[in-house]
Figure 1 (cartoon, rainbow, N blue to C red):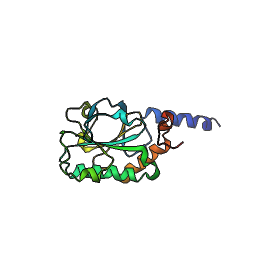
Figure 2 (cartoon, helix red, strand yellow):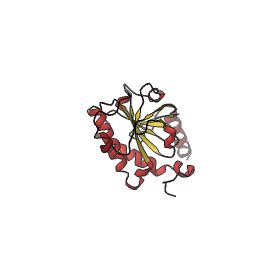
Figure 3 (tube, rainbow, N blue to C red):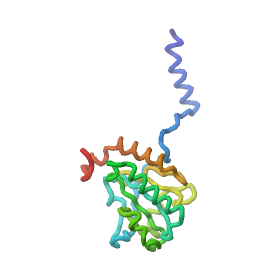
Figure 4 (tube, rainbow, N blue to C red):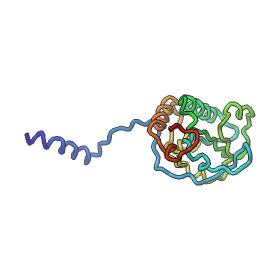
Length: 187
C-alpha cells in the first residue's frame, strides 16, 4: 500500500530532477514572445508600415532581397499555400515579405503571383534586427501573433504540411482576435 502511494511521487521527483521533458507537438521553434517595433515602407503606396497595423491578424513573415532567388520564391510560395490550406480561416492570416535591399521585386509578375502579400522595404529597418536566426534571417519564415509579437520561427527549408498543422493548431486555440473584437473574425 505504501509503495502505491509513494510511487507517483518518487517517479515525478526523479523526472523533475533528471531534466526529462516531454517532446513538444509543434514543428516551428517557439520563440520568447517579442513585440516587433521596427518599420518599413510599403511598396504598394509608399507609406510607413508597422507590424502593429496588422493587429488582430496572424502574420507569416519572410526576409529576402528584391532579386528573390529560388529559396526566396520557395518561402513566398509556401506562405501562400499554407495560408490557402487554412480554408475558411485564411482571412485570419496576412503575409509580409521584408525586402532587405529596398528595391522593388525584379520580377514584375510577383505582385500578381503573391496578391495580398505586403511587400515592405526594410533596408536598415529595426525589424531585421528583431528577428532571431540560426544563421541568416533569410533562412526562415516567422510567425507573428495578432498582438504584433514574434512567437515562432520555422526551420530552414520548412515542410509546408508541418507548417500548416502548426498554424491550424494556433488558429484553433487562439481567441485573441475575438478578444480584440476585430472585424472579419468569427464570433
